[in-house]
Length: 588
Ligand code: GTP
Ligand code: SPV
Ligand code: MN
Image 1: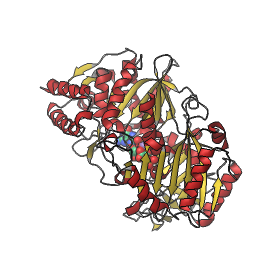
Image 2: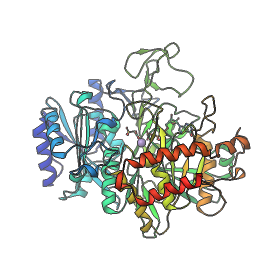
Image 3: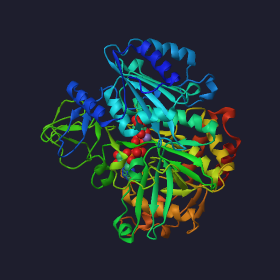
Image 4: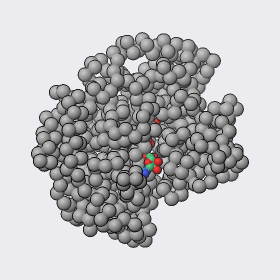
C-alpha cells in the first residue's frame, strides 16, 4: 500500500515500475517489524549472514560480487544539458542520450524481484538543512544500509506532503555487469540512476550521489555548500568546545580523525573530542555570520582494514552492534568477523571476502578486501557529539584540507587568508586508494577532496568557494595537513591517529589568535616548540623535518598546479590564477 497520496511521487513510481517490471512493490515504513522481516528474508536467500548474536548483536555480513567492490569513477556521469556545466573533471553525456541508454538497461530489470520504496531524509527531518529523497531499489542490502545511513520512514513522506521537491533515485542490480554499470546524475532533474552495481557508494544513493553530487549543485544555486568533510568538536580543559571540518580524499583518514581519542597526557588534562560527522558536511551561513555545519547522514560507512583497539577504539566499539559488514573475513569458529589490522590473530578456519576457505596463518592473500566496510549507526559511537542532531548544526572555526603525500606537503600549514585557503584546497593532491576502482598509490589532484563528487564544473565550484567570502562575516581559517609523509624506507614519520590532536590543538589556537606562526612561501607553519610532543617518540629535529618546505619540490608542485589549472580554460577563477603567480613568485 502506498504511504503517500503525493501525485508527483506516485506518478514517478508508476513510471519506474512500468519500466523495471518488478513482481511487487514494498514501501519501507521504517518500523522495526518490517526491517526484521527483511533481515530474515536476506538471510534465507544468502544475501546476508547473521553473525554471532551474543558477541555481535544485530550484526550481519554481506559479500558483494567480486567485480563490484568500490566506487567506479569512470562509470559515474553528470548529465546536465550543457557539457561545459559538467566541466573537465566529470564524465558527461547528453541527458536525452543517457536516458535512452539507461531505459534499455532498466527495462525488465526487476522481473521476478521486489521493488522497495525507501523514503529518506538527509539531515534531521523537518530541520532547516533537511532534504528528502526516495530511492527505489531491488536490493534488501540497500534498504538495510539506507536505514542505518539516513533517516528512513513514513514521517519523511508526511513532511514532504504534496510537494514535488525531492530527489528521485532508481537503483537496479540488474546483472551486475561491469561493462553496463552506470552511476548517473541529472542535477537539473533532481534525479539519480544507478544500475549493475551493489557496492555502497554506487548504490546507497543518499550518500555520495545525493549528499555530495546533487547537493553541491543545489548548494551553489541556493548559497550553501556540500562538502566531503568530517566534522568534530574539540573540548579543551576549560570545557570550551571548538569545531572544525576537514576534507580528505577517500580512505585518507576522515573517520579516524572524527573519532580521535586524545593521547594520554591530553586525556588526563581534560581534552575530549566529539564526533559530529565522518564523511559529509553541509555548511550554511548562520544568522550570527558564522559558517554552521551539519552531518546529513545518520551512520558511518567506514573502512574496516586498519580499524583496531589501538588505532580507533571508538570506531571499533561503534561496530559491535547493529552493524552490516561488507567484504570482510568470516571467522567460522565463532561466527564473527575479522580484517587485516584488527589484531595479530587472524582466524584459521575462515572464509575470505570472496567466500572462499581461508586460513589466516597460512594464506598469502589478504582475507578482507582493502575497501571492505562497516555500516554502523552513529548513535553507537561512544564519542558522538551532543550536537549530532542539533538542527542548526555547529559553528565552524577551522576548515582543514589534507591528503596522502609521501613528500612535499608539510605536517600542517595555514593559509594566509580565505582566498589563499581556497587556492590551497583547489590544489590538493593525494595518492589514490582502494576506495575507488583503479590504480592505488598514484598522486592525483583532488580539489577539496571533491574530484569524484562535484556535481558541476569544478571551476564554478571554486568560484562558489571564493564567493562565500562575501556571505560569511566571520570566516573560518583554512589549513592543510598531511599525516602521511614517509622516510626513505617508506615508513610514516608522524605517528598519526590520536597524536593528530597535537596538530589540531595548534590549528585551534591559530583560529583564536592564541599562538604565532612562521611565514613560508606556502603559508604559515608552526614554530617547532608550538607542537606539543610530550609522550611521543618524535624528536624536535624530526618535527622540524615534517614542517619543512622544500623549495625544489614545491617548484615542481607549482608546475603541476599550472598544468592542472590549464584544463579549466576561462572557468578558472582569476583569483586562483593570481594566487598561483603569488606562489611561484614566493618560490623565487
Ligand atoms: P572514506 O570513508 O573512504 O571517505 O575514508 P576516510 O577518509 O574516512 O578514511 P579512514 O579514516 O577510514 O582511513 C583510511 C585508512 O587510513 C585506514 O586504513 C586508516 O588506518 C588510515 N589512517 C587514518 N588516519 C591515519 C593517520 O593519522 N596516520 C596513518 N598513517 N594512517 C591513517
Ligand atoms: C568514499 O569512497 O569516499 C566513501 C565510501 O566514503 S563510498 O560510500 O563508497 O563513497
Ligand atoms: Mn568518503
